[in-house]
Image 1: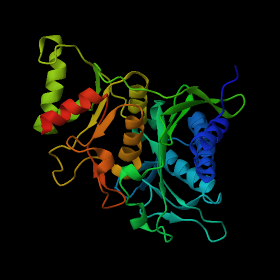
Image 2 (image 1 turned 135 degrees about the vertical axis):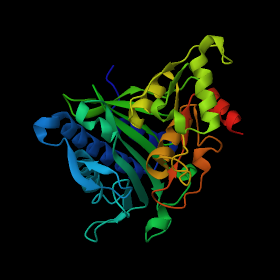
Image 3 (image 1 turned 90 degrees about the vertical axis):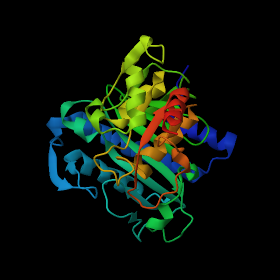
Length: 329
């Protein structure tokens, strides 16, 4: 049986659930940009895209060449299609509007163009994360983007690894597509992904252990105690240092991912970006039956106050996320 293409799948969503045709066009455009980024990533050193760009983003982090290249590819692919009112990126200080020469649409697109920058030059899987909101304010300035995660109409990520995969939700489950390099089409390879409620795998940067707050330290200590400890089972640790890769693994077989706040910067609520990383991943995780919190509060309920707001993240298998919340209460 022939596999369903991304376009065919989205058209089916239009017919069965009344999904907006412009949302379908937007997701198809993001997918085309993902193909272009995948091509650039695949060329690596041969394409001259590795290494530092010798610039910094709005958070003061050093940008890689591919950070800038991927950001520009997403902007250029989406600015002329008539589906967007504006875009915002982790790599840009302010939102970028649609040029006056092009039609404006009813959606806002937010993205982390290349997640996992530390892995770009060492041939480890990296990815793209995106979120779609409705543009309720015709001006589409920064305030228009400050909607809680529950307002997302779609979200997804791409992972650039041995295969290029595109994982999306439009609020009706989570679906995985794999790029067929022979035809250039994204084909449906898994439908309605479900995350097991229980797990024996955790992902966290153990080098930061001395900086963690007490509840996170206690949780990891209990995991490391194994079958002889209070959890009564052995845990394995996995850590790729690319949120896309770690979340994609959880989507396939369960697990818990933690990027908690720590004592080094007590004024900051966390490291990851609420709008570009935490919200879209939280929507995907919940749609697959998992849970996502900042340790005490559901991520999707957080009201954003700034475009580049940071947040602590605990997501994955529901029972483990809820257990961490109980320790933090």
